[in-house]
Length: 251
Image (cartoon, rainbow, N blue to C red; front, side, top):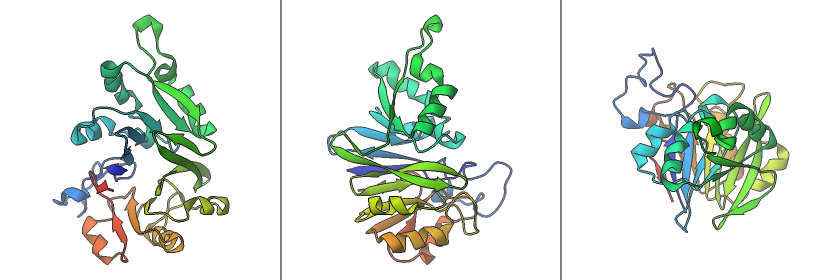
């Protein structure tokens, strides 16, 4: 199984509009961050997309992705779902519904906000693109075991996903006690670590490192980064912990 960090940035992306800080002016391509998303390619060659970020089209073209076989949604915030319409290109070519999965809250939000994506528009010949599924328990997908992991995201919630021994936990400020057993024995942990300073809705870098110390995965990748964080600052992270960057490959 292989994974690609499609986007490693927070909701504003980096550079942020109107900002001229050192990271927004950086010439290091790893400081150019689109909105957070992950692509997993299974051993059978199928592709599982986590979130349809605002920058989905740009990410798909950059990585030359020619098909998406399933989508896992973490939550309903704009930066994680507003690229959903860019899945149309795949449907024009393959003419098939793509199954998508999420919590009851997330799927309900998507059905209400993007009803045409799921029902189509007969009057304009717009075909349905996605088939909605509630992910409330572990399930198998293309030879992978998918485990939804309930997360706290400030006063709200989000869903992380464990795919075999890789966990993707974006947009979270705490891990409920009941979710911790779902994250034991990880090979790869990809986790929200917004910035150095605290934030009510996200782990900061210290909080994410503390989580990695608790879970003890082989490798920890910190994502959903703001312009407060320069990629080169990763040299100061503990062994086994590193910053994500757009296009990063993980095997």
